[in-house]
Image (cartoon, rainbow, N blue to C red; front, side, top):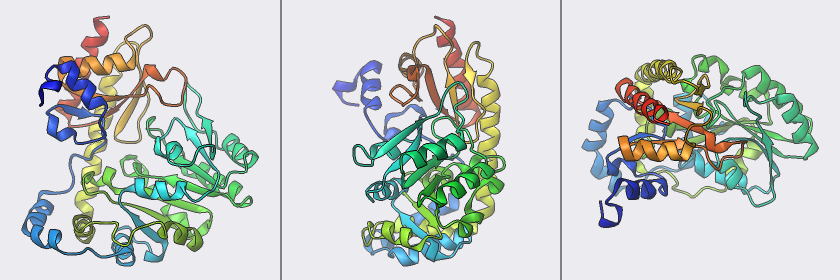
Amino acid sequence: MTKTHSTPQERYQYIASQHGGYWRHGFTDHNYLYNLYFPPEDFFTHITEHVHQLVLNYPIAQKDLAGLVGELICQPPERIVVGNGAAELIKIIAGLKRKLIVPVPSFNEYVNAPPAGSVTQFSLDPPSFQLDVEKFAKEALHQQARLAIVVTPNNPTSLLVPKDQLIYLAEELATHDCMLIVDESFIDFARNGDQETLANEIEKYSNLAIIMSMSKAYGICGIRIGYMLTSNVDFLDQVRQGLHVWNINGFAEEFLRLAPRYRDKFKQSCIKVMDDRDRFYQELKTIPGMIVYPPAANYIFCRLPYHSLSAPEVTERLFVDHNIYLKHCEGKTMPESDRYVRIASRTQPENLRLVEALSSILASE
């Protein structure tokens, strides 16, 4: 650490201004959202043994990448476009010059990426923060939106929008030439995620597309892989045209080649994440005065007790006093955003340590 970041407070200010690279700085990261139990160790052994070939050679391009993802998710490659993380695909979709509507709070890129004036923000009202799909559909049609975005489980609330409600939404929007983009990046951490995903409904609705960030569920944040799944060939082609020829590197390609052999281990890893998260949820609920929302993803949304420190103050205290970093929600589009935090679930010992540290900070006020 340089002299300019020599004190814990200076380190905190530096970290708070960054977007990644946290592993270099030696703190416990309850901000970014990882599957800590995947990939398996033999994947890393394979990568190490083939590192020269992966670095020195060109990777494959989009058509073959779609085939690899298709094999993994059991979908035809002609329905798939593969991105350098979901963020690349979101940026392309945002640039299609279509008016969007996005429930907020949500993943910031869906609001930040489109041109100014092209996004309608639909508020998810406290205390429930649940999406009312009927009101959302009416507002989408009123605003003449051409793209409606729904993140489920949502980020930062970790709340799931039931599948039947999303199907209703797709049907309502279909008659008005509005695409429904459902971001399911955390669906693998929902207890009934295999039943709640819309992937098996994709061919029934030409106005439906699913966005997936594989970085989240598969624990490969540094590799960067995302994909979009849709039966709408015209929409898929529009997104594909925004990609570079080699938008995915050789390490990502090799992961996709190996991933099908790890299906069982992947499912087991997600179960482990869910078990840790559910226990974490119960432990967080023991903190007096804190509202803890039931999670469907690998993170938990909480409202701090009334009259306690603000979320930014608590976040800084956790870092300075306990070397733990989490995500406060100040600046998110919702009332009293400085009262909310999003806490990523990690291992059980790390989760317990956070609960103890957070409890001590709130009890001292």
